[in-house]
Image (cartoon, rainbow, N blue to C red):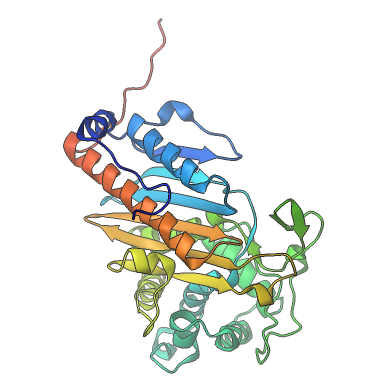
Amino acid sequence: MPPKNSISLSRRHFLKLAAAAVIPPILVQTSGGPTDWSRETDLARSVREFLEGVFTGRTMALDFRRINAQYDQEFQIQINSERWFPVASCFKAWVALYYYLNTPRDQWQDTQGTALHSTVVFSSNIDAGIVLADVSRRTSGQGNPIEKFNDFLRLNVGMTNGMYSWDWPGSPTIGFTDQRFLPSEFRNVLYKEELYRIANIFTVTDLAHGYDVLLRGQAFARWPEMQQALAASDALLRIAAANYQSPIEFVFPQGYMGKDGILPETDLPTGMGRIVNDAGVITVGDAYYIIALMSIGESETTVRDVLVNISRMIDVYERGRRLMGTPTPSPSPTSSP
């Protein structure tokens, strides 16, 4: 039986959608924020509208982008992209880049058994704190390990949010906080009409932007140290953990580079549901798709079903693109003299 909200397109309907082709780049955003609807193609609109239906009634958010072989962004679809969600372990993807950029190349330790490898591949919470504390000791400037990492996320990666703390038992970062990201009445999570003050909340756009940097930075970085750090982060994030698949990895078993984040209800305030997040990059032909998905109160099965629908929309988009050939920009409107 197909997952809930799965799509079935007749050949006639598919050709009608594909006839619109693709106009690069487009921004498609729902639930907040300015949108330039005039640049959305019929094909992209169909994808967006279908995914909006999939997300209706669920506490979930999505940032979904296509990057072509020339590393140009062709589209971006955002649903609930301005809402905060607990980030769980998704932030560990950028612990890798943080480490590589702040550690001399001949001192990199990222093989199996090292703290960095365990942080990224096996999602070790204690090792994440060890890496953060280690890099903090070796970097100049003021601030504790959490503050320095957040400065990196904001200044080097371009995120707008950061970690408040990392107080996992056994971690050397216990007791350190960044008051800029203090949970408050102005910084909280909405779930079933209740507000929860929770540490370490991000948006899907933070995560998608972070993977955009990891992906396209490798093509556009101007200095070798950055290129090496990005390439090393990419390679580490592609290592599959034994006997485990993230939700995206389950649906897209080939060409996945990313990091998920899961929190059981027991780690959350009473009344909140399970956190199931995943974000990363998948390779489809000569193109890349960035997928950042965050959720509250949904099971892994539900998240996988949503990702199956995203997979089907990728197929629709790719077939439409092939039918129409290489996309070309629409001519800009001209005014009469």
